[in-house]
Length: 411
Ligand code: HEM
Image (cartoon, rainbow, N blue to C red; front, side, top):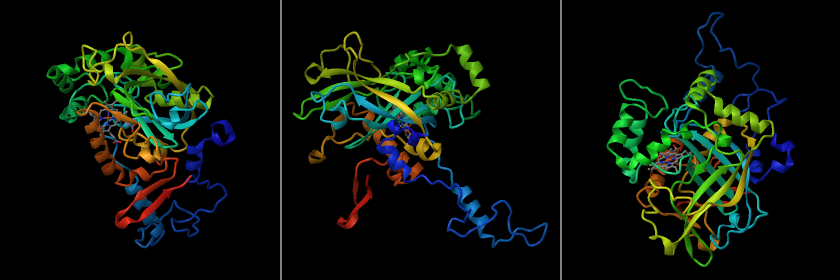
């Protein structure tokens, strides 16, 4: 589809296209190119079998099938994504040296994966659950993943409690239900013994956790980030995505009935609307606090269980994102996108040691980064960053052992 619409054909699309194969009109073959006429019947010793062990095509097909799954994410397993573009409205050079935020004429390709936190890969999409809103910006200085949720605060202050929280929110161990819903005994045990979760609890029990559509959902970076400009001056910021259609939710009865009628409601809604040209649009907002004002508030601005009141720190709209293209292959693109809070692009090649943006709450996001790095290596292997959907659209050079340099992607 994207090829026919030049306007939506960007650097990332060109990169992905090289890994897309069109088999139309080609003869069927084995994995190693041997021409075959049939892959639906095994080689047998007689009319009624048995199947012969030397049927290498059968072995090949089964061997692939037996290994083609990767473990699902431990959280945010049920997700759906789309490609798009981001443009800043005016230069943010006073705040950051990141090149994709300097020039209003620069179009940055993006990939967004929306998800459900507790639900497994097959969960009903209208369940009451926090939603992930994770954006990968393919900037000309490397990828920046803004890994957010649709709620501005988080459950915990110290990430050592994250495994306890997730064990509590997942189905109960002796029954394996409820699936992807946040209202059961183990969950209430956790909430009851962790008072810092009270704020998040109010949001979860509101209609935020039963959104009407991904196209009508807000997104929040949650953590406090630090933007650094060329002079080295830094500001604390919170990121906000605001849907152009406005934020809307179901009422509980609608969510229940729709989930029964169509467990894939949200992905179908996003896919169909993008196909019809009703692109999903969001504006990017920033709340900004200068370093000098860090202690001006009666709460800790680095605490992810608190929000920054918008009447005290207004949200400034700085740019717009449009999701305008569906994926060609959900497994290769959405599932392998594996967004990662550690991916914050570098400001300039001469200053590789300093990212343009630093996250500021040591106990929460720093440990999340470590955890996500470990899990991605085990789910997707240590080479996960080389999948095409993750690869940066800029030239990537990896330093290997023995001082050799290997170029893995050139665009
Ligand atoms: C308390 C610390 C946290 C830890 C240890 C943690 C850990 C994880 C892990 C292990 C994954 C799965 C990654 C994968 O298998 O690909 C993940 C995914 C995710 N996390 Fe967190 N997380 C934390 C906090 C947060 C917060 C505060 C947010 C919201 C800002 C968040 C948003 C997400 C999202 C959206 C995903 C899905 C990314 C995708 O779509 O690929 N997490 N997290």
